[in-house]
Image 1 (cartoon, rainbow over the protein chains, first blue to last red):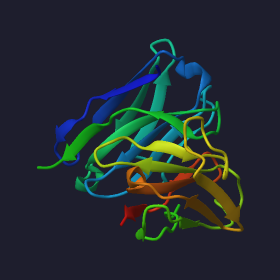
Image 2 (image 1 turned 180 degrees about the vertical axis):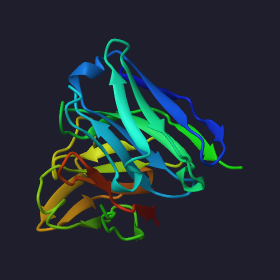
Image 3 (image 1 turned 30 degrees about the vertical axis):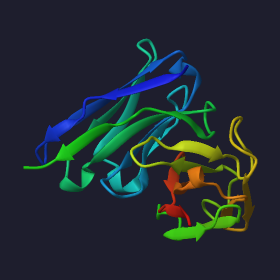
Length: 120
Length: 110
């Protein structure tokens, strides 16, 4: 069964940086687009960033550009989210999700999420 | 990238049908057929229910159906069951390798 496990969350002060990791198993991320999605406490889902299977296409939500960067290491079957200049409003559960396609496609598998709390 | 517009809540009795709308723009919902819907129970990760506007993944009951007209996509749950009570989110490709979610709709089974 496909598995995605996020790690790297925790409590961080405003202005600091954090890198989230997503470990994939039982499939190769090199064949699929991958996404990060977040959910603030009691709020809805928010798309954060995505990267195509080959890394040639990648982007993040307009409101996060310049602060959040998605990357992947196919050799390790891992995906990452580098988050800089964190703000209180970035507090959320961060999910990594696999697309069913290499560019587009629904998010057919999700991790259980990692909680990031930005607080002084 | 403004969030797609969904009603905050809908409700229905067991066996009834409910429809959730998802209104975007000609740059997202209206431009592409990459609209999917996700069901999320409390404390759980989301699960895809409909993709490519109207396709159903294997294992999803056929009481779930999707459609699109212009800039508005819709999810219909027919024959509502207790286990359908959850939050539902639409999700659309918005061009230039960006995506956008709807604000979410809470479905209550009366």
